[in-house]
Amino acid sequence: MTLNASRTRPKRNAIGLEEERAWVSFYRRAGKDPAIAAEVAAQLEADIEMKREHLALYLCCRESLRLHQAREARNQRFGQFVRWLLSGLFVRFPANARRAIGRGSDFAAACLPESSVEPAAAQVQRLSKSPKVRAARAAFKARSIVAETPAPPVAVEAMDAAPRAAQANG
Image 1 (spheres, rainbow, N blue to C red):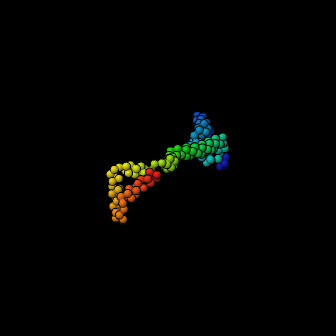
Image 2: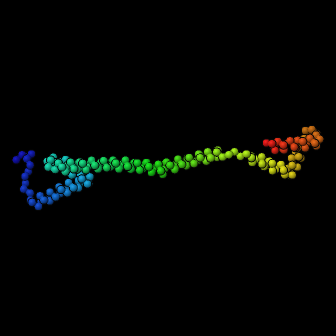
Image 3: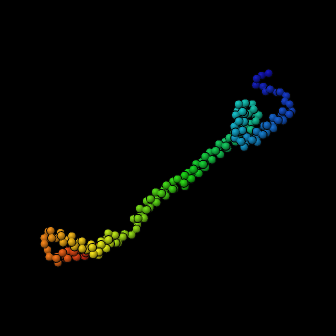
């Protein structure tokens, strides 16, 4: 008897049936479960004779593993897209919106119409009408004029009226 010759051992009928059922279940499950397909393919690759006997099962296992690999690659691409989309919605969009709102307030302030009445000019008008401020202003101007050169009181009133006229025009 040679080593290459197959051993022909008479099998019991019940064991043969169970073996046949196991192979049939491998055919069914190998297409659905990549873990079983990988295990069966590894066993069949280790034994060349078994691989020849169950070539269809081996090819089924290889196909199942290829489909599983393609499914995993598709899931990776889909997951990457979902992560990109969610980060865009919840990370990049709010950051860009905050930045735009920060710049928008400066832009909105620049778009406002210019104030025709200067607040300081209105305050000067109000204070110049006050009798206390008029008296203090006249006294201050009188002292400064007396210190430089003595002038008649008419000149003081004329000088006092000149700034008011400039304030009314300006």
